[in-house]
Length: 114
Image 1 (cartoon, rainbow, N blue to C red):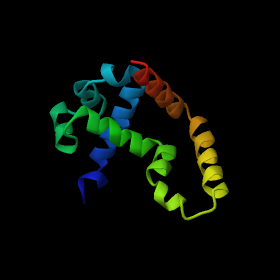
Image 2 (cartoon, one colour):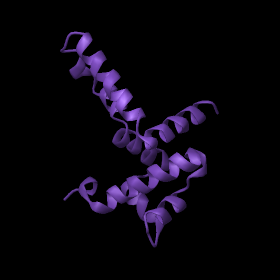
Image 3 (tube, rainbow, N blue to C red):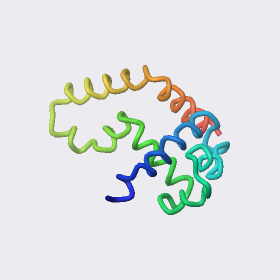
């Protein structure tokens, strides 16, 4: 089993998502994320993620299907424009119906504004 397949890895991502969504990037700390994940030593997170920025980027990739679709844009170029545009629009609408995604969108907007 790889690091990414472990239950602990997913626990880190879930805890970090919640911390970032509620406290923002600057307010969330490795210590608070580790505590939210139930770790005795928050520094264990560094085994999975060298920096807080790396952890944040992984959460974005993990939690945002729209962003993932954009990152994998090469596969979209193989289709007529209408198909990927409809797919992106549906993904955006469905993701924004989730309260967690609304929190993440607020986080992005707050971070961009600073």
